[in-house]
Image (cartoon, rainbow, N blue to C red; front, side, top):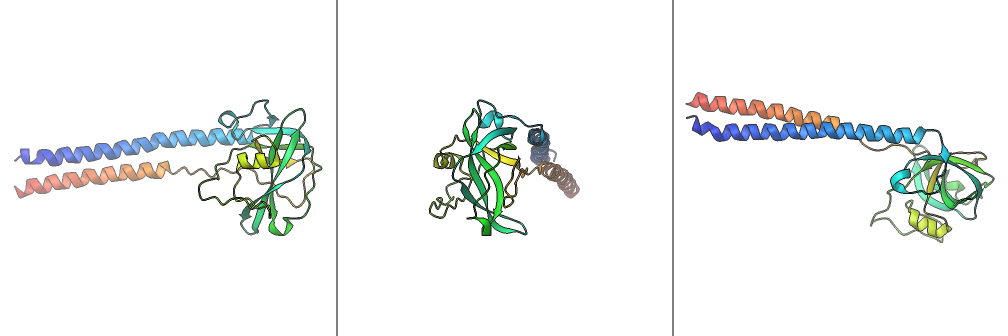
Length: 223
């Protein structure tokens, strides 16, 4: 009779091991994601440093920096919206850094009704965070240059259009801000649901265990 229970026992143990492994894997992912979010938050809120001479996404994503200089000519309007305020645009302008490159500056949000109003360019000091946004995919519409409407922050295309380096600074503060533009600092929208996933897998392993015990008890009872 025992040999008839070998396969159910092996199957039951295998299922429990797999479910526990998935649960522990999610625990490790939780630790990794928590550390990642902490590191990003630290970088976003650390004291601003001068813009490095060499800037790249790998080493400088979210780095808080400050620049001095003057705004160049032209600006890009990136379509977006805000809760309770409706549609509007991110204002992205070229900024000529003193003794440095010309970069892109995301100055923040302006309402749709202010789209074509001239914006102040008196600012000479900007604080913010470097960002390489991942907003472009195969479904992103082509920018409408005649109406100056862009549908994603595409650094490569925007930098070519405004003749800047492919560096984007998301402004948190300007020394002389425009009243029609509201700064939009980078916010963390990275989900961290690994604790719920771990609980789910561990719960399923418990259910699997009792189902296996019940099945074996039922088979033994039959005999």
